[in-house]
Length: 431
Image 1 (cartoon, helix red, strand yellow):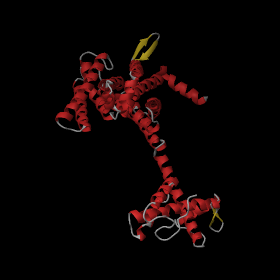
Image 2 (cartoon, one colour):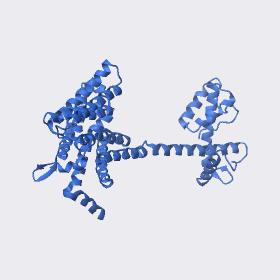
Image 3 (spheres, helix red, strand yellow):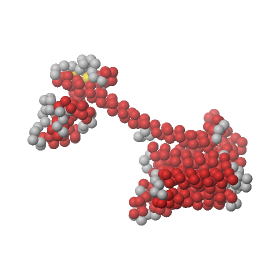
Image 4 (cartoon, helix red, strand yellow):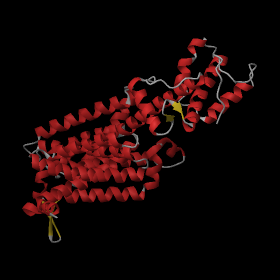
C-alpha cells in the first residue's frame, strides 16, 4: 500500500503535473506504436524514419503561415512534406537509379536539414523553440492547457488523444485492407484492393502522428517511438493484432517508466523514454521465443544430447568386443559427466555396462552411424578412412523414418542387403 500511495502522490504532485506529462507521453507513444506496427510489418521503417524527420520544414512553414505547433496548418504542412518526401524518394529511385534506402536517406536528410535551417532563421519571428522541436519538452507540456468542460487539459495531451482515437478508428474501418496489404501489398493490388491508397494513408498517418508527437518528445525521438515498440513486439508475437497490442503496451510502459526515471535522474524525459524502449528491445532479444536465451539453451541441450549419445555408443561398441565402457570415456570432462548422468538416469549400470533402456538408445545411434557409412560407401564412394567423420556427425540427427528409407533404398541396389557396414561391422536392427 505504501508503494501505491507513493505512486499516487507522484502523479498528483504539483497539480497533477507528472500525471499529465506521463499521460501525454502515453497517448503519443501509443499512437506512434499503432502506426509503427504497420510500418515495421511492411518493412517501411526507413520510410517512417524519413517522414518523421522530413516533416520538419512542413511544420515550420505551417507555423510561419500563422498556425501553431500541433495545429491544423502545421499538420497540413507536415502531411504535404511527408508526401513530398515519398515522391522525391521515388523520383530518385527512378531517375537517378538509387536504391530505396539511399534515396530515402538523401531526401530525409536534405529536408530535415532544410527544416532546421528554416527554423533557426525564423526563430525570431515565430514562437517555436528549435530545441523543443528537435528533442521535445515533455516536462513543460502540463503548463500549456486548454479548458475542456470543467478540466484544464494539456494541449499536447488532447492533441495526442485525438490523433490516437483517429488512428484507431481508421485502422478499425480499414482493418481487412490493412491486413491484406501488411504482408504482401503487391498481391493485395492484384486482387483489386487499394494497396496504393493504403500506403498513402499510412504515410499520412505517420506524418500526423509525428506532428502530434514532436511537441512532447521532439522530431528526433519520435523515430524510436515509431519503430522500436513494433520491432520489439515482432520478436515476441506472430500475428498482427497481437503485435499491435504488445507494441502499444510496451510503448505506454516505456513512456511512463522513462518519464519517472528521467525525473529522478534530472535528465530529458523524451530521451529517457527512448532509452527505456531500447532496454525493452534488448530484453526481448534475450527472452523472445526465438531469442538468444532460447537459442543458447537449445544449443546447450543439443550439445549435451550429442555427448550422452556418444558415451552410449562407445559403451555399445565396447560391449560388442566384450569390454566395458572405459572409466574415462571420450569427450573428456563432458564425457565423464555424461557417464555419471546416464548412470543416474538408469541408462548405464555400475561398471560401465548398458542397461536395457540404454542399450536400445545406443543401438539406434550405432545403427544410424553404420547405415550412413554404408550409404556413403555405395553412392559417394569415399575411401574407407573417410566414411567415419561424416557418419559420426549425422548419427545424432537420423530418425527412424530416415533409417528405414536408407535401408530400403540400399536393399534394392546391386549390392543387396545392408547387414554390415563397409568395415564389416554388424548393423543393429531397428527396434
